[in-house]
Length: 76
Image (cartoon, rainbow, N blue to C red; front, side, top):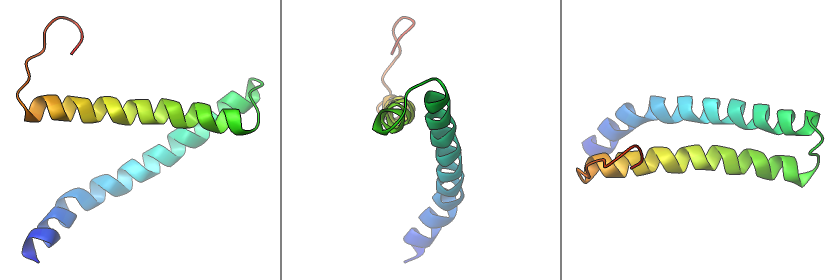
């Protein structure tokens, strides 16, 4: 139980901030796409793709750091 509590105290605030930032980012991207003529489900799809790409890139950086993968060249 103590391990779960420590994990929650360490990651809880980060998850809350990530959810707030993600909601703001998603809404901003969707609204921008709508204002520039992309309406309906496609404006939602654009926002999802952009935000998920950012999440996937962050996860890959974490994985590289965890596995001590060295960076070669300008791209990992």
